[in-house]
Image 1: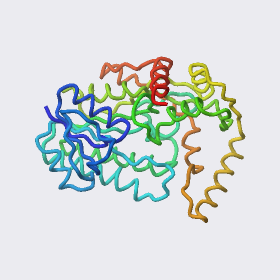
Image 2 (image 1 turned 180 degrees about the vertical axis):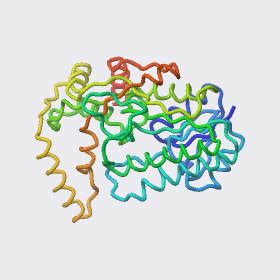
Image 3 (image 1 turned 60 degrees about the horizontal axis):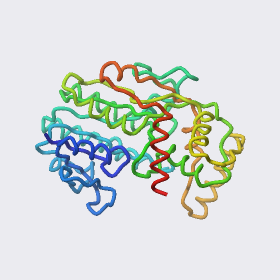
Image 4 (image 1 turned 180 degrees about the horizontal axis):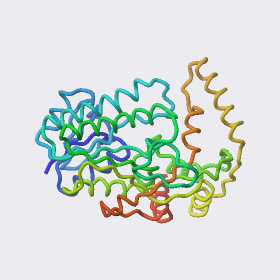
Length: 328
């Protein structure tokens, strides 16, 4: 069996490629740079050079494959250029779907995000049938939603697809910008003081990386077709998450709560100064807005139909903390 995979140098794609390879599946991994140190290494992983927007490169790498795993996405919320999001998340996805349909791929498994649903209404869990209740907060949410619409369009054309809407992922793996929980653990292990917004009551869903990988494997089941699943773990608020990490790491860090509006105003001013002096923008106010809204969800459908199982938050954090300590 062969599988075409995008995003092999990313957090989810890297580990998914390795897991598929361990299952004796030959993985055709499309990567932009064949010299990247982030390319997973295994005898069953074959890197192909190319970009997902290049139909020739995609066609060459996807040939003779049975399944497609599309995990690649542009996620940097600090970017102010919508074309970066649109080209990768929309045009790139359409290119993948177009070639998959042409090559009669058995199934495309598309990695999406819980963010497409927008914030949850307070602590009412988001489920797959829920419509979006708010306008799009950033270009990432918008373009991932547009990509999901493309998936539906290609399902109507006869392509078998499964969409996995992943919540906030954490756990051992590549150190990426979008992995907020891992970054928080590193800060709490190394800093004496930690400034945080005073919205610690905000709740989100957190999912362990190994569960995300397993969900992708389960989505390969022949009877699972043209479905959309929320792939998550436990719901908790920031106050509990911070306390858990602090206890489990035995950190002495002092958490200082700062008024959210004041902190957001400070970041707005810093962004203006960074633009004026042509400095790299570190955190835009929009990133704070995306992080500090309720994103509570349920994976009941995945549990029922995929036989999906989620790791308890404490257990997942323990594995993650041990991994990070070993890296330090």
